[in-house]
Amino acid sequence: MALLETDGLTKSFGALTAVNGVSLRIEAGKLHSIIGPNGAGKTTLFNLLTGTFPPTSGTIVFDGKDITGTPAARIAHLGLARSYQRTTVFPAFSLLDNVWVAAFATSRPWKGLLFKNAHEYPQVVERARAALSDVGLLSKAEVPAKQISHGELRQLELAIALAAAPRVLLLDEPAAGLSPDETRKMVALVRALKGRYTIVLIEHKIDIIMSVSDRISVMHFGSLIAEGTPEEIQRNPEVRRAYLGGVAA
Image 1 (cartoon, rainbow, N blue to C red):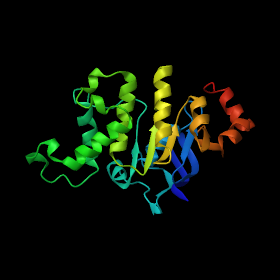
Image 2 (image 1 turned 135 degrees about the horizontal axis):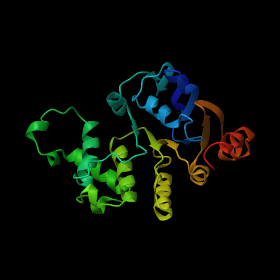
Image 3 (image 1 turned 90 degrees about the vertical axis):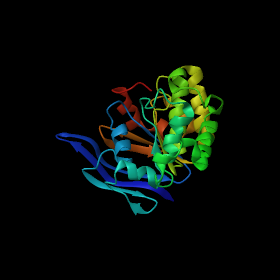
Image 4 (image 1 turned 180 degrees about the vertical axis):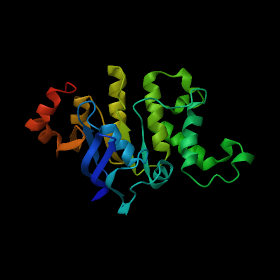
């Protein structure tokens, strides 16, 4: 059963069509990867799914409801959360406070915020601590974000997404810029989350994609050119041709 799907999704910026008629079906509980050379339209697709951009045409359906054009803030409340290629945290905040903001923003209405200390919301604090625990950072909960390593910042970004209690987790190159050891740790985290969440993954490291994905969709110049299991994608001649002029696999 598809939890998230698109039909003919298109986004044009003037004469440039960044996403062209993309129809996807993301099955509940699966890890579905989106791959393709640089400029294929992968991140623009994520921006459409999460409400950052409105589509030029086409539809987005989440859990049977049409959410096309829904603003990003509302998308998060519906249960779609994402990480970004570039780290976006509050460097002076502790790790716990960074995650607390995401947990609070997607919880109950903000009534009383001006009259309470952040830690007077025990359920929000508990959710934030659970998210840090899931990514292995609970022991550093009180450490300022500016004092942790790049690999730990990527883990923190993942915790921020988890704190929103998502039903679908969209991960945009979570291993970008990581060392081999950090990459192995991130892959282990993603594997641990499989089954607990429906995951949509963008990643350029093809060995990671092939090792964690249930299904893979391939984009090229804004369009989908192939979809299948990792084994089917590896054998697909059109995918090989697309990568010859793009990012080396």
